Structure formats: C-alpha cells, structure tokens
Length: 292
Length: 328
Image 1 (cartoon, rainbow over the protein chains, first blue to last red):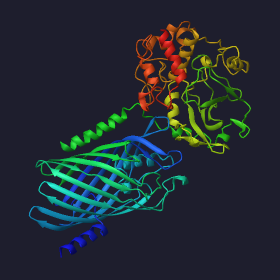
Image 2 (image 1 turned 60 degrees about the vertical axis):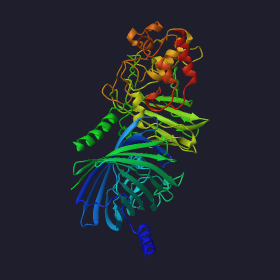
Image 3 (image 1 turned 90 degrees about the vertical axis):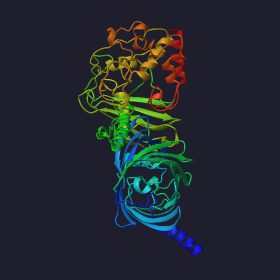
Image 4 (image 1 turned 120 degrees about the vertical axis):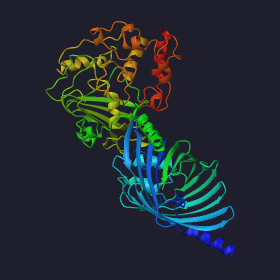
C-alpha cells in the first residue's frame, strides 16, 4: 500500500503540472514585488551581437489569491530597466516590458504524521507574448540580461515573440524548523513572431526549457529563515538555438524576515556557476510580500 | 517602512545607474538622414575599384587616434561652391552638406567606414554612423547600433551614440581635420593646408601652427592632443550638462593655439603641461603618473584611458608619453 502511494506520488510529481516556485498559501491573498539587480555578460544570438553585456534590474509584480483551500490563482507582471553596453564601451538605457503570466496551482496534502508534513503542488501558467522587441535588438538584449540574472531559468517571462505554457510540479517536506522542496517547471514556448531576430539567429518554432529547483530552508528564529535554492536549467531546446553547454546551474538563496503579521522582506542572492554565465553574471535582489 | 526600504533600494540602484558617466543617448534618430548603403553616400564613383567620387579627397592627420592597430583612410567632401570658415584655427566651421569618412581596414580587408555628415547650419547639426562591410566586400550597410567582432576579427564597430560620445567634446564636432592636424611636419608630408587654400576651400589663409619642443615633446603633445583632447579640453562644447563620458576634472590635453594668439611657443604653455603636470603627470616618474597607469590598462569602462573604442594598449604611443614624462 505504501509502495503504491509512493508510485502514485512520483507519477503525479512527474506527470502533473505544478508551480515550481509557489508554496501552498494558507492566506487568502498575497501580493509581492520582487526585484533583481545585477550585472551580466551573456551569449546572444545575432552576428552583430554574439554577446550582450550590461547591468540593471528587473522587477516582477507577483499576485496570488486562494479561490479555495487548495486552489491558488496568480499572475506575474515583469519589467526590466537595463544599461546595455554598446560595442565601443558606452551604455544605452533600455526599459522593456517582458511577458506577463497567469497561472493556477493546486495544492495536495500527501502525508502528515507527528512533526512531518508533506504535500505536493501542481499547476500551469500561461504567458502572453507582450515582451518588447526591436530591430536594433536593444530590448531583446535587455531582456536577455534579465533572464541571465536568473540563470536563464525564466524564459517564459523574458523571451520576446513567444506564448508560453508552463506546467510545473513540486514536492515539499516540512519538519519543525526545516523545509525541503523539489520542483520542476517545463515551459513550452510557442513562437508567435520572429521578434525582429535576423535569420542567422535560428529561432525555433517551439522551445522547451525544463527548470529543476531545490530549496532547503531553515527557520532560525520565529521571524527569520534562511534558504539555499539552487536551480538547473536545460537549454538544449531553447527558443533560440544556443551554442555552448546544454545546461546552466544557478546557485541561489534567500533570507526571509517576517515583519509583523502580514509582511515578509526577503534578500535574494543568485550566481550562475559554470558556462555560459558562470563568472560573468551576479545578481541579488529584494522581495517584499504581503499576505492577507 | 518595509515597503519604503525596498523602494529606496531600487531607487538607489536606479540613481547610481543614472550617475554612470558611460550612459549615452541613443542617437539612432540622427542617422535617419543617412543612406542605407555606403555606395549611396557619395564617397566612391566606383566602389569595386575604390575610385573616389569627384570632389572627394583623401587626407591624413598628423597625430592619429589609436584604434587598436587598424589601418585607416580618411576622406572629405565639401559641397561645391562652399568653403570652410577657418577664422578660428582650432574650430573650423563646416558648411552644410560636408561629409567626412573614415575607413577601417585589417589585413587588406575593409571592416567599416564611418560617415560624419553636416545636416544643418548649426555647430551640432551632424549625423554620424558606421557602415559595416560585407564579407564579400561588395558594399557596406548602415549599422546605427554598431556590431561586435566584425568579419571574425576583434574589431568592434561603434553605435551612433558612441560617435558623439567623443565628437561632442569639440564645438565643431570634427576631431582630425583642423589647422593643427593638417599642417605638414616634415619635408615630404603633404601640405593639405596649402592645398585647401589653393582650392579656395578656406575662408581665411592660415599659417602653419608649430608644435613647440623637441621631437619627443612634439610627439607626446601631439599624441595627447589626438587621443585625449576631444574629451579633456576646456572648450566644453555641447556636453556641459550631459554625462556621456564628460570628464569632471579640468584637464586639457589640447594644443590650444587660440589661447596664445596663435603662437604656442613653449611646452610649458601647452594645455597638457599647464593642467596635467602635478595632477596626473608626475615629472620624471612615468610609472607613478596616473596618466600612464590608465593608458597602460584595458579593463572596459572608466578604468582605462581612452575609455571608448579600444581594447589594446598602444605600446608605441605609451612609450612616447613615458619618455616625455621621464624627461620632465
């Protein structure tokens, strides 16, 4: 019986979509503003610009609402403002909207005994192709930098010219002050336009960019917790053909401070390790969330 | 309070970015007046044979800008019937329609040709952009945003806004075509000043402007004039309020003949000596001079001098400057 439940859970984990980032929210609503600031040199797709460099920030407005005890609907609206390096060394300022996303997450308790609690979540998010692009590839390069801050793990948000469908799943185990989560998100990116990319860029009609994430969180105090949150992104079928290694590893983490009953302020840290971004990209950020 | 902290952090990041002197305006709109192909700009009557259009002539400045060893050719065309206002020998005023081209070559291959074209009567009425040559060398295409590593070389083509990062440092926006740069310095050098006067292309006759000092002093002062004075001068042109590589300090590396009524007779009168010695030049100590330290570095951004358009140190130019500082 136990083996049967294990196989069922594993099948659900692999087969059913869930939000790779979402935790089951017991609150009615949550709204958050997350910003990532960093500097990066990342590979790019065109003959004129085989790479792009610069610094700046991306901001994501993240809102979720529980429509039932287990069902959460959410939206993410991203925006970037970057200083994109030009060939001779000057910087151009570029602000660009990225792709907004709507999603649903279903939380399913699985196991609860004494101090242990496990649950899995499945979900799906759909992104609209509203990211800016231009023939000069300024907006495209700015969005590429924003995705580089995340180790290329957010292609649904930062790829111009695609509609995304992102099924996801996660499994979370909690015990006392510890919480361990494993998540997978598999964005399918369906091209709706060439995003002004030149022919040599080899844009694919469909892209698939699986992202695997782990998070280990430890509550240090009632109001303070620390977490390590590495991610692995598979780039083999990226929406634009990429030379170089098939995966990108991202070392990340965050520290969360609860400020009263409703607010949490998190400090984020992200550093890609290994090619193509390792050594050339570093980002950090802040997330302020409010739950009601 | 927490929300204010988060917003404050974002605001700080944004403000710091706004304070970055490397941030320049996107000047793509100023390239609208330029044709899409180099063959349409009026430089060549026969591009394949490299035959110049009538009225276009080649020139070479005496003191050249370091461009990572690229071979360069320069051309100018003044509209028929027009003349250059040469009243100010350091700031010639060019008529509307004037075109200047600068071609960059490596190993006998054309990489890019930059065009500066006067589009109106005002001093700042210029359009500028680079044309990137195709691999088959049949023509070059307008590239308002430049390009990296063209034709498999490490040569980068600047974006239009980067042209003005340097050229906006001069009132007339033109750097290498002036009385200082065209006066012959050796017996076998072409005398472009006399040629221009003979063709009635100058409003006033000019006498040659002699750079003072020994051969090393002249070479060093000329090098600093050509490579540094478009940003480091006291003309302040159009950039007194803009960032875009506008330096804060009051250094001047220009050969400022006008300041001395056309007669710069001693090295001590030069802008480099007056403003830099004791500041970024330590007499007798090249390695201890900040000028040499920055010229010897390549690290992108403001940690190197010049800060734009070069990824390799000019060992020969650096050697000339070092030798001059050593002699002080």
